Image 1 (cartoon, rainbow, N blue to C red):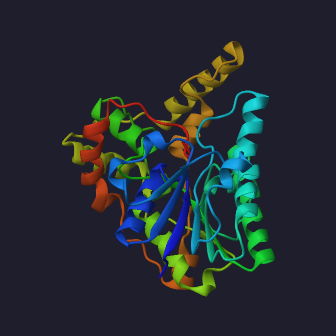
Image 2: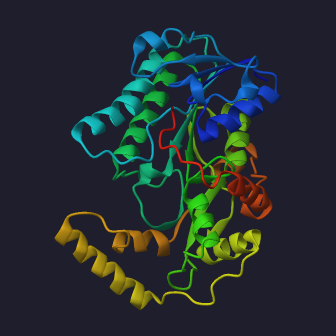
Image 3: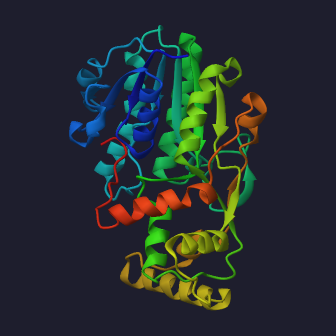
Length: 339
């Protein structure tokens, strides 16, 4: 049972779903965001909203420091930095911002739940990666999230408050214009063609499972200092996704796919084009790998430790996601999680 909570990045995709659950539980909520303009109207009078930036210590001082739990979601995500200044800013938000937040909290904080990413592994392929798999991030985002994880754990040990890290693969659900939304849009517009047989598998997690896991780890001491991978507990093949989304849209899948031999030739042509024009082309070997390699994760630890079992998956949420897609398909996507 929690009475008060701080949610950084509360108007992000995951944050909105999390705050809605906290409202449902009658928790006193402080939401810390970069822009108050994107706060849902239904939150008015139900949450306290503080506008600021994690890299600005003065704005952090306005948050307060006495909370039963801090859910730290705010981060710079998705957009790949192109300049040294942008790279410095990613580090400043994800690492220095986390440090600033931790230093502002008092010892009265009971729990910190930090939302991390499977990008800390640095793997483009693999099966059943788990919490003891070696981390070797290859992207700046992955590196900064891993550094922030360690900061959270170290501060918890030092100040004797409970910490839990949730590592997330691709998160989907209503409100997220990410990979699943883009796949739905491509299938809807008849622009999706499966590469190979589509038998490669990917782990994903529905946003409701993320929220449920975040709440579940608060109720047990065994999760203190732990890292947990959260998934749907189902590894989806590309063929499964294609058929399921097509059915949800009321469309028949295309009766053909691109054979892997041809796909590899097209990818090689893209690689050559990249070298010639020095600009990433829409299709190359890296893109082909993401479409055809398997990358799956095991969420067995959280089930073993606290008995957490995900309730949602793409099979029982696809209709809801398709309905949302149809209402927002013409709106622009956001690239900043802590807006």
